Length: 139
Length: 139
Length: 139
Image (cartoon, rainbow over all chains, first blue to last red; front, side, top):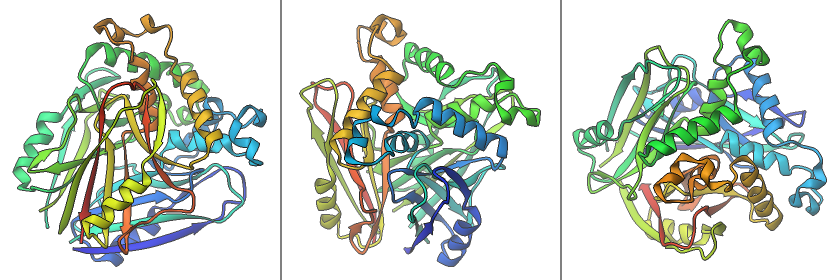
């Protein structure tokens, strides 16, 4: 069994943002030498997500509006978590909707994707350095 | 390490629908010859889901009503994504709630399931052919 | 390839509750002898979740309030599933938001976690014995 572990660092300059990290993950699959296996990509912080969707700007906007409706940032005092001095309780809830991780099949040394699948890093409490873990196992 | 890769095709005749795909996945586990390992099942399209729940008709209805409440189809012009000519922005949001994928343990050559766990394909923008990926690795 | 399979049992005395199961899973990783691999932890019941978040009491409270808002328990007759004699339809919806499973990288024989990541069992229909599956594969 082969394996590869890499930590990617991000610092999104705004509170929220989506980054397409597909090319980086694809390069790591090649580097791993794995032909058949699984690739786990997960946020290592609980106010960020890794998820799969289409790279289409209108959709980014729709997700952002929708998440703010389901889990509004304000009023920040509404959340008990924010009594710790943080103002990011909503970011924990938004991340739960978008998910912590994706697991992707590796087939013939490539990410085995449908036509529109792209991997995104979703930031909900930015302006700090955060990590994503890529773990590849297989043969 | 053994591995097996299969793509399943579906064409749901309505906009939305849930299909129980457990017997198909179970047959692929047997075919793989894997005794101990992991089975990934994921939608390859970003307006569809794979998830695990009870096969109970009332629950299907409750999910459908609930998803439409959280992410309504109309008014379609409300979503920026639909400016591309699509009317399926809500399907992307519904799929996010229901999830892209499941990872299931294989133990003694069987899906290691609780008493009510069944694998479902969830369609939120049907009337077109779509794929699900099954990837099995182990020994 | 090495593998380990364990079923953990829980009986939460209230309808809802969150349990930090990180130490138990860490002990199983050590027991498995796996240095590099993947660890799947999933609820085996469809009214419970396994998810990753910070172990902070205010956040527990915020999740509970939020889930009740997105998928209220009452009126129970509102849900078709409850016509089966159950009153737990909301628990199925809450579990969908929180997720069935997590997949965690194992690196150098440890769970490869960010600074605040902890594994939780989330119960949404307690007062009965339920299981969580831990499956570890790797080398």
